[in-house]
Length: 160
Image (cartoon, rainbow, N blue to C red; front, side, top):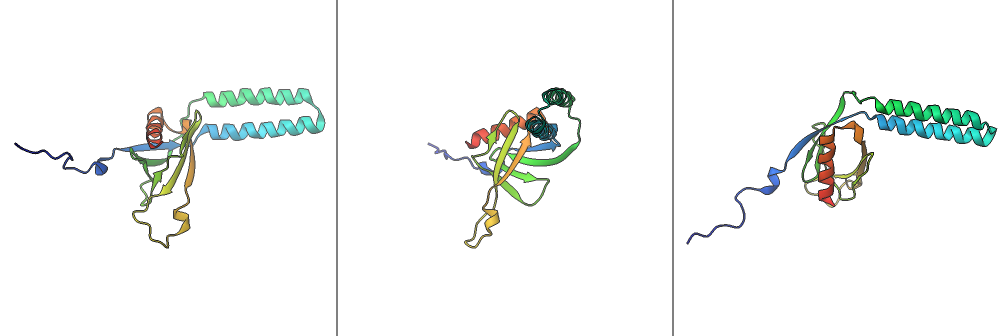
């Protein structure tokens, strides 16, 4: 009778799937900042001058122009790339520093909020405090294709 080992002979951690995720400049970012600027302008216009017709005109033109701006496809070239593994490890632009996604990363209909910490193999007792502070990054959904967004979504949901 031959006894089989219950553990395979290969290391599971070295076979993590790696995905190259390309990120481009987002149009949503500009739209959000523009809408915020228009809103602040309208509040100041109405509260100081009481020109309601002018405020309504600016609001309608602003909404229509932002809608037209967002309806045009995002053809910007890719500006950044990152390598994402299914275990939540991230490397930016082939740099030597890698990060580990944390479980408090979040997803939204407009993008994903990545919370990560620098991946250090062994932390000595006198480690720099900046390596322990989580770094945060928001990536708008339109700045990557659907396949890359679903990969990031899948990894974040596995971490929770």
